Image 1 (tube, rainbow, N blue to C red):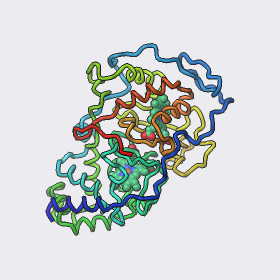
Image 2: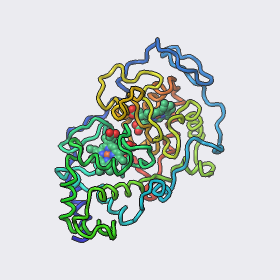
Image 3: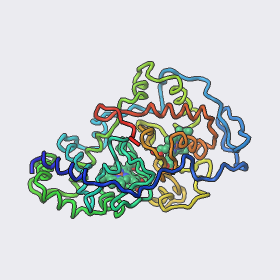
Image 4: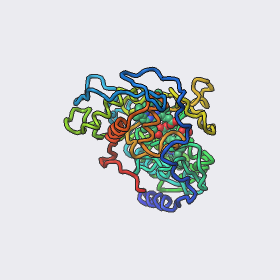
Length: 384
Ligand code: HEC
Ligand code: HEC
């Protein structure tokens, strides 16, 4: 088979994948957590707070000064280039390898029954996630966690909500073998590739001098190709980046106020750096117990499942906030339907403050400036 027919074959398989009828419906717009208790201890005082009579949570005064240009040391940084990132991760950026990785990412042969590809859950047209509260694998099985975006994932300190994979290649070995996701195994997958002349030719081009015969198609090379493709999933060109780069007038007053608020109330303590997150693990419920009133799942233990350290109980990798307007629903369990509500939840549980409607609106307006481009096209909002 030629490269062309390999491509056609993969696309046919992709089209053959049928949608599950049994997807969980979107959660209600508010979380199922307990109402805010009046006897809540007061959190550490943010600047200029006033007490809120009803919730016991502090209010933070609106920002007084809204800088119009970036300062010397902003907590948020522009994205690196794909080449810089590949260098930092010591990944060799061969175009033929990126191309192979891209095909594999869309190839349903990575799943037992040929219905699911990486892209089934990480749809690159719609923010790199799947728009459902929890991931849906083969046989319409609903998993324990919300699908994070693959865009900019290469910038994270580790992969997965609990960070159990150290890098992209080891992450990519997970889903194909996970019973609830793709349900296959690498002996089966590499065998399928070895039998397809088009795939063999693509591997040969991607690994010149290394792949000479079908048997040289190995799990390691397959994962390396996927990881190489994923390095290219950066989303530069957001309005916020343009502002950081010195362009004036790309952000509206409300968006600038939102960014000033983001720094003032403390969001940037956790969501910082080029990905606006992804750098540390943090407990969900820093300032107020998040899980007390609801049934706990194994996945809710977060990083504790990896380290068995009590301090890591309910800790999760801080998600990147780039393109966040496109990846609802939110949180590791997909329990929050809207960006407004996610911001409010962060105020309450991570900062111990009750944000005013104005502050929430400003923060959301700012977060929407973080939507970038991929392959020179703006990332699109999902079709509902
Ligand atoms: C059935 C849906 C599904 C499929 C198929 C799937 N993923 Fe995922 N992906 C998820 C979920 C859910 C998570 C989070 C799981 C966790 O944290 O334990 C995830 C996490 C990731 C992450 C980590 C992102 C981060 O910020 O930590 C990457 C990268 C990724 N997947 C890439 C892939 C690749 C590559 C494939 C194909 C080999 C794939 N996924 C197949 C649902 C899926
Ligand atoms: C103490 C650290 C910390 C602070 C402060 C913090 N966050 Fe978060 N944020 C997290 C963690 C951890 C998660 C993921 C929690 C989970 O999924 O269970 C998260 C999740 C989010 C999400 C959902 C992203 C997604 O893809 O699901 C948004 C939006 C968000 N934060 C915005 C904010 C805003 C806005 C602020 C300030 C009002 C803020 N955060 C303050 C740590 C923090």
